[in-house]
Amino acid sequence: MSSILNIETSTNICSVSLSRDGLSEFSRRNDDGGKHGTLLGTYVDEALEYAQMHDIAVDAVCVSKGPGSYTGLRIGVSMAKGVCYGRNIPLLSVPTLEVMCVPLLLYKADIDLSALLCPMIDARRMEVYSAIYDSALHEVRPIHADIVTAETYLPWLDKQPVYFFGNGSEKCKEVIHHPNAHFVSDIVPDAKYMFPLAEKRLRSGETEDVAYFTPFYLKDFVAKPARDLLHPGNNG
Image 1 (cartoon, rainbow, N blue to C red):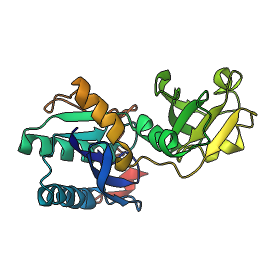
Image 2 (cartoon, rainbow, N blue to C red):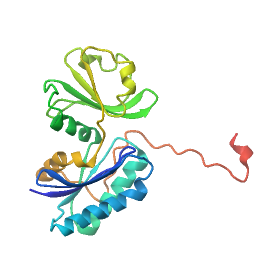
Image 3 (cartoon, rainbow, N blue to C red):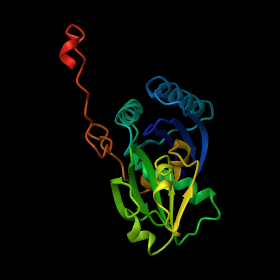
Image 4 (cartoon, rainbow, N blue to C red):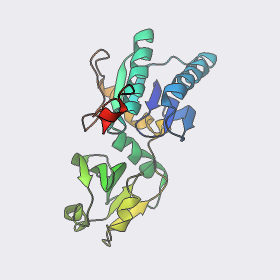
């Protein structure tokens, strides 16, 4: 089996884990948001120190690649690349929405395995980043930025149960009232759930180019115009 350093920074949550032999051995997480640039380096250092103390050879780094926050993803990928360069080990990436499915499949015994899974990341207003998977994590519908209405997921809800979860699903409860719609709370992207996906990719040789890999932002980042502090009247 392998040992992998996992990094997840796609939302307001910053998390790092060290997995070995199919288990998450070490993990750190902060839910406060806005502290990724400060905390991530500390968490990675702690994970690598743990590996050294326990004679664990880190075989690869896996980063959650999005969609999600532009800034968060950029910080996470930059850190992952730095560790890979410094240690000459492979870079792996996993879709953030797949990561969110792992705790549901591993730890929710009452989930109907014939149902579909729809992880959701809050975007803005009634928009979410979402995809639809079956219980084997085969992609049924690719990742989209959805404007959620009562009709958005009807093609799947009319056929079988669908579980909605993630921070984007809370606001969807107000508009999705289909009898096949089920909502699961407290599911977030977390590095400690990345290990099954990361190990699968490492075994199959699905590595990324450390020099050229970029996150999956889904939407282009649009910077706001800088304020003209010398001539504030020019900003309207």
